[in-house]
Length: 479
Ligand code: HEC
Image (cartoon, rainbow, N blue to C red; front, side, top):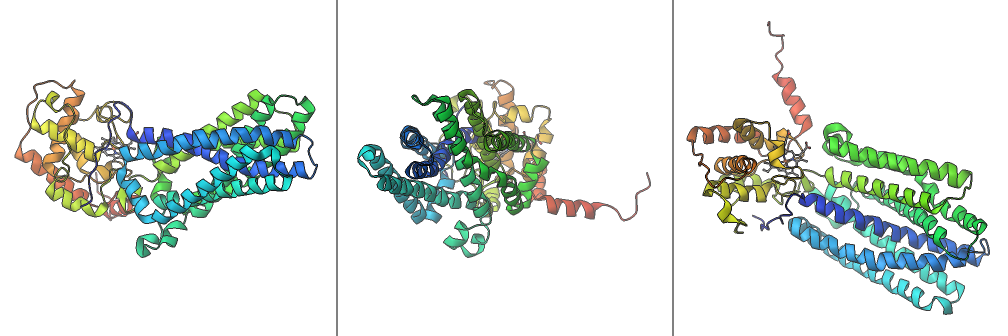
């Protein structure tokens, strides 16, 4: 069986949300830096060919922002992602490093190249010829885009490992079904962010009059044009998504659908403004409006990332690893041996628990549920089960993958399940120091039966539909 690491406890904040918050900020900054590199090349070229008299001033001012963001904030949040991920899902990070070891190393080399070329430009800008400056900027832009290219392969593998599941070949895992749509999509998002950020920067640049600013804004907004193909890429992405993930996004999970709609709505708003205002009518855009559009773009990125992460459930690597670090093939064994059989970590504040059964429940919660739930707080189990009686709770947890198919199957013994139910109930009753242990053998037998009925496979809409159809009697039953 694989190694067990405990999930960090963030009180009322769900670990998944903490991960998402750090990741969204990083993705936003990193994609801005990628697009920023491309925009700088374009503007440097305009300066060299004399097509815009202020392009040189822009390159100077904008480059500082890109460097600051990618070198300082990008690096800080990048390390932040690793730091958060190892507290929440070391098994996922382990799987990613194990399968893509040399790709990570290659990605790091390109990151170094990005830093070195960026630094050289920053340090020697005033002494460089135009051509050398452009060369450095091109190296910077290519290096940062290749980083995106590589990380995109690893991230999209988590959702759609495709043929890799059979062949385990690096190329199959990397160039998986969602690789291209998400690469194109992310590249366009990068250009969009760079362009919107440039509108903000141009507005705060000193020494330029309104006409100069308008000329520059007309140029940088050309990078918004590719947004036109975003809807197509969105459909492509949806089409290669696994059917069950698609069904969460398109209605199965209200939260995910809401986030998808926020993302689409915000992108449409930006796209419409960009197309009609900036590209067709060549309007000036002031700092406040540009900032607002950038904020909308942040919302769209956050929504999109949330959907991408959420749609993977119940897996963190599809068919390979559940979000709670249990592997699908381990479920049957854990049901026999117990999910705590290889978990040697002590329980925090153990003495505040009333008895061993509730303590066991606390540890079962930590092992199987804590990645996605809190006890009381975001997605809190006490709140979610608030209106259920004990038997309903036992049944729904025993058949967890059928209760909501974005949860993995319960992977423990009937005794552990009863402990978990007692733990949730005790937590919802203000954690009294006295609590009776529940050890009725009839209850355990009933739970065992339900666990058996649930099976060890993940929940599956198609299978369920078939089963329900078979259950329908041929002739209508007379009432
Ligand atoms: C992969 C993430 C994940 C894991 C692991 C997980 N859950 Fe959930 N669970 C969810 C999500 C997402 C919801 C949906 C919340 C909503 O409907 O708003 C949910 C909902 C629930 C609900 C409410 C269901 C309903 O129909 O209203 C219960 C009860 C629940 N989970 C219990 C558990 C227990 C107990 C465990 C551990 C044995 C667990 N979950 C593990 C993600 C997970």
